[in-house]
Length: 150
Image 1 (cartoon, rainbow, N blue to C red):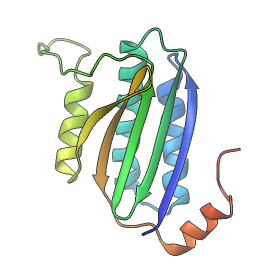
Image 2 (cartoon, rainbow, N blue to C red):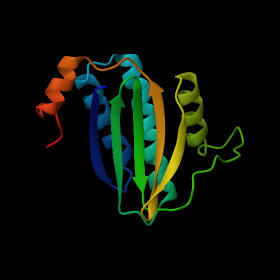
Image 3 (tube, rainbow, N blue to C red):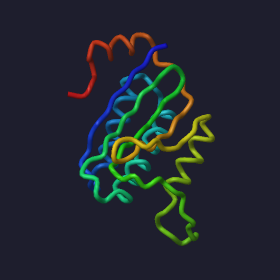
């Protein structure tokens, strides 16, 4: 079963969600996924990174790891806070607090799941989606380092 994976470490600031979206989008386009997968995955990456920078303020950097193994796309974000993610009760007029609910709904609809894994001083928060496997030509390019982060 082929696997492609990339990661990026971002400074914990307001630019991080946009940088995560761009990295995710570039990788998925290089892996020959269409707009449907790209749009959903970039939204997940943005929500997970936004949650990390808002709810792990002592974290200097967040690491975003994303990859495809077989027919599963995983988006994972590491922060240095040991506090487990929790969905908030929000009122209709609230402007924030819906991120985890959005992630849960998207992953469930796309045949995936979300959760977290304690790691080191912090945790990985993840979301998965069911996707078509990457073509073998893409796997060969990734192994050769063509299109990888430099």
